[in-house]
Image 1: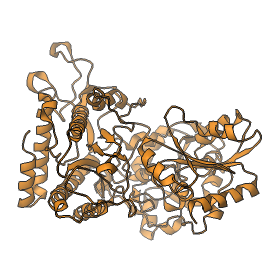
Image 2 (image 1 turned 30 degrees about the horizontal axis):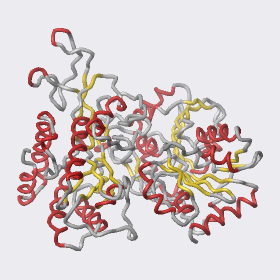
Image 3 (image 1 turned 120 degrees about the vertical axis):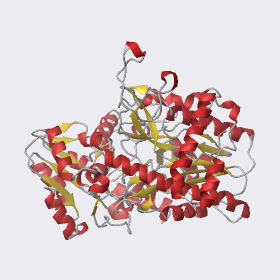
Image 4 (image 1 turned 90 degrees about the vertical axis):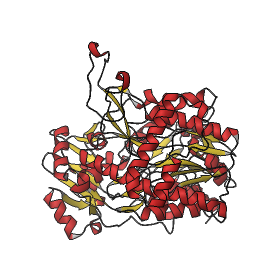
Length: 608
């Protein structure tokens, strides 16, 4: 079936059920960013392969909403399908409810699947539709019928994340959760919370070592809802030892309905079917979401180890790419495969953390470009190659972007490369007092390009999990123009990734993963040294007040190629910081490289 035929099949079902519109999000029952194949229904019905978007089909119209990362990609993939592209956050773009209210009639029914839409989404949509006299139905999954070869629920085997990497037992984490919820219960439906709490991993989600399941914690019990086929006898014994009982995955709603106590549940993270089964929900954010974003000393040590291995793989790939692209025969996909090959040589490697964004030339301007056999293009010894990639290692998850100059560049390319570098340095070297949030720092990354009338619409940084999701704590600590009030505190992991994208020409992004650490004011003339040191609370005698102060340790260790840099655009302070970073990369990665690669790394990290 092609997209037009799939939409027609959906419309036939809608007509039979008396539904005037059906809304298909990009999520699964656990509100995950990356979802198992079974729940990639929006991709199936629309043909749009981006990670974020919502498809809406009526009996005679269809539209898809997505964000700025995917405007170019969506326009290409929706061409000829009859699906309108709705550009989110662009002036003049209607909301889903506004669009439906304009084309449907009062009394018509709009439907969603309550298992893949959160309670908050359902409640908000229902209220918005009421203003147009439209009704909402939540009890139907049309894809169970019309998607004939729909994948089944994943059944990969669960395995433990040992204390060697986790640093804290599941029993200890459950005790801390109980301290937070008191005499109440809590339901954990986010897969990162389930994985972190129980120190369990699996391969149910592509590139992310999660297992499908829910956890319910009460003052006396901890219950894991999971397809029991996923559990080996050893894992069952492990869970018993940590005080966890096992229930079938499908029993979650029934058991919650029978639970006679208040239950913590996040309406914006818990699917409507599960949330509506709770008799007395406590509408609060999960304390577990905040617990897991603070990495313990073991996790931080493991992160550093993973970044060193990943940096070594990146260095080998960069050298190989610069030497082999001029020989011809390389494409975006061949370079992606080569990078995975170098990562696979590293100890504890378990796969990529997401499919590499390998964007050459104009493809670099597509923020989340995912090369396919249909879009794959040759890579030539000219212009820029943007590579955003990462690895999954037992000791950590990596996320790194580098922009590679492959040959002759225009002045505009060099300017953009340098402006992004300035923003990356300014944010990555920031020193800030306790209470500062990511939104307050976001302008550091953008100021230099703003002076040239340039901006980007995506966020500048996000959390990263420890052998979990490459995007973690999305609603908490971020660098973003939109308000995110969560303060940045020691132990948090966050990325620094400004970018410039010129449609039809090129894209530039530099990205490191960083750790929030205490700033040390023992540097020259009392200025902060980065990173590390003991916290200083301030005092008039020293001239330092309103502390303690924090800064960032760059966990990512990978050189930035210097040939495109317009050095006169850098301040002396920016140049000094950059040279220091490059030398740190060279020193830390040298033990992981042979003599040939050490010599190459030493040469390309010479001061500018």
